[in-house]
Length: 96
Figure 1 (cartoon, one colour):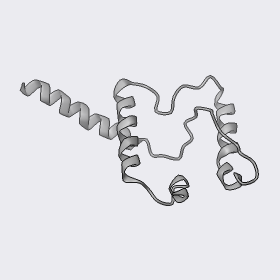
Figure 2 (tube, rainbow, N blue to C red):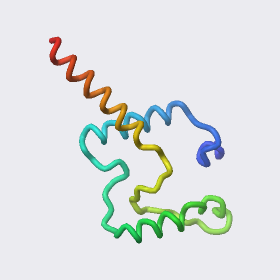
Figure 3 (cartoon, rainbow, N blue to C red):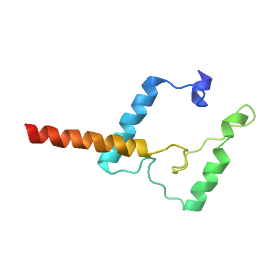
């Protein structure tokens, strides 16, 4: 189970839920990872401080509650899926 949280293995259900949640955000025009009141610099600091924090979680817990865009995920897949779904919804409405 722990390997899943480090990204060593994937859980299909979680991957599908992630795709659904993020695609819905794209369709609503919302930022994928939330809005942050911090400057870009401070978001980067939070990202760098917590990047490998799980590696040392046995020493000290270092949670990260900052919304930032530095997740190492190719977000284009969410936009492609949203485009496909919007096109399907549009063609579905036209055919009815």
